[in-house]
Image 1 (cartoon, rainbow, N blue to C red):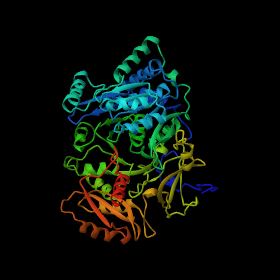
Image 2: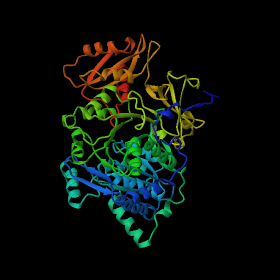
Image 3: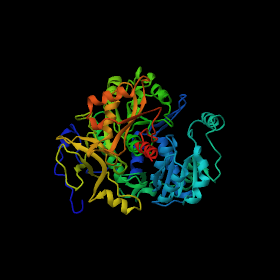
Length: 578
């Protein structure tokens, strides 16, 4: 597409936002994210900001004032004791727990750049991310400290801070939880590298702050909106793990955009969102952590949602008004008797992202909960939300909605030309939420950023109103005898069959047709047969889209947020063929 200039000539979607929606993000009320945290902490002061509920019902809550106090203290610790400077990278590797927002907000206030890391990473993955980012400090959950002897010597990390899952719980509860994890479940290994406790770090920071009379705002008063605040690692559009450089402007803009799309149902200061998705994932990070903090809401943290009965107590103890999740979460909850027979009574709406929402799941969710699950579209490189169904406008349940305010979206073909309405093309995005680029990877940046347009690698189609339907990932497309087959469409078809629990579709090499469609299915009904599935498919999709092979599994490989890993299935299938 050399020499092509991408243009967005109009925004038909703006008339579908609904009344009261700000069309542009012309003003920013916060200088940076640290400023946002401090001002919102003062505004909501005694509201509960964050709570954590364990499967047995043991719980602890922190107010906005608590989070402000602890994150201030941690910022002081980072600057005065750990000696970080503005722009230093701080790796944070923990599940959903009370320490997470304190660590993130404290890092913002200290002028640091967060590097979110999956706690389940292998030693190799940890080494790559920490070394590539140049992280100076690692804040890690103690359950995975046994990996550190192998990891730390191969990185630039100077200090390790250990988090306990029950940090900030009352002492008796914390001791009980830690004892069960360590001595009964054997889940806490010995840490062989020098480390310090997270809660002791916070306490030390508070002591220094008091003794030196430190004004924490002095640390962040020079931080600008366009300064870097996060390196969020992603496979991106090419599959190579690299850090998307997100700025304070990127995340604050996306926070505003999300708020605009949902504000008709958002009652500031009164919302409770269930945080099942890990906060280190960009979807939950921006929606559950950043946006709900801005709105004065409470985020109910679930450290480990597997099995799903681990969430039951949260629904019993809290008036959950919002849920963010992926298709597998909503499908899984619907299959839980305790949920389907007693759905949450205060639920307003649920937000789906991260993976395609199957129509059968969204229809069943509406039938069971009497509330919609509305789908949006995003990617790490866009902080992440690009489009969303406007809750104060028109919701089209089979789409990912319209571009959020201040965002342009066009669909382009292989030659870089904009395609007409109704035709498929790669989704290109321009807006204040789009990243600066990939950390120290100008080659990769140049592949996906063209004149401020982000080429997403996702294939979609836009209707006359500007609503977008995701066809599939460009790289997941299956080519059958010259015809394009998109796995999402086939999966959505199969998911409508009552006996199907979960489904994933991939393309496998075929001597006659280049590729053929293969489906992996987890049964909900043990009597389900291959013949029933094929008969069903032939009713709804054309012959070349119908799976040529079907394999039943007891489970499908998934990411920590529950997104089915097609690539793992494909790698496995290719090995079998070889």
